[in-house]
Length: 351
Image 1 (cartoon, rainbow, N blue to C red):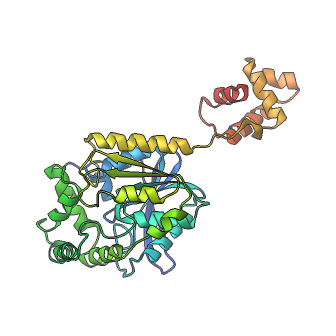
Image 2 (image 1 turned 180 degrees about the horizontal axis):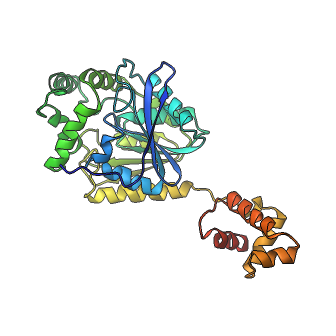
């Protein structure tokens, strides 16, 4: 397999939970802050090499500044842990958000980590501006929704998680990505061994099976986008619709796919990216020009007449440096930057 190198610089950092467990988190991309509580199989470094996950990192990084993390017991975070409860995972998310210095942000919950994102949004409505739930369930372990199936999945984890061959792990892989190529399936097979231990996989899956945040859904006030694959083999067909119906301000998008993890070359992936980009754009608030002082508005109106900074300074009996400082203040107030900032500011004041 050919190693794939990241096209976007990723910064990996670490912080400590209140019980001393080391948590790993990373940031990449540009745009509004998007915090992702990803699925239970993650590795901040190896995901960049993955033909299953790489397109998520690339494409989401084009529309947002992505903050993601390895939950306790997985990836680059500490593995020697024993508490995978929803309460513990929620505290970890709170710690990570504070470590990243985020105030207000978009929250995305994926797959088995979605209940943590949902619980966070319900608890912190002042911080979550928008919520995205993808391949999400409000509770229960993915794969195996009856006692017999659940026991079978756990037995396969015990027997095959750490084995060199992928015999037992392939069952999980085909549940998550039945439409994958052999190369993609092998990557997913290996990610299981790479991302965590057999003991953590079992303990984490058990904790997820016993998790249910359904009663919190009506408390979520953030605008919410629920994305599900119509024929996802690891979820009940109606789970997404039930979640969307329970969250007051939500919208459901059903994508045509059988994969729990959408693959880069299927049409559903384009729908996924377009829906998220559009949803993020809806949440961007344009600062009003009423925030500007009378002097700042005056300078912009003179710029609209075609005057440069020197001419504006002469007209208002100011120094050129003062005019430049006023422009910088305007850009900050209107959230503008780059070479087009001046033209954009002038257009806003004339609108």
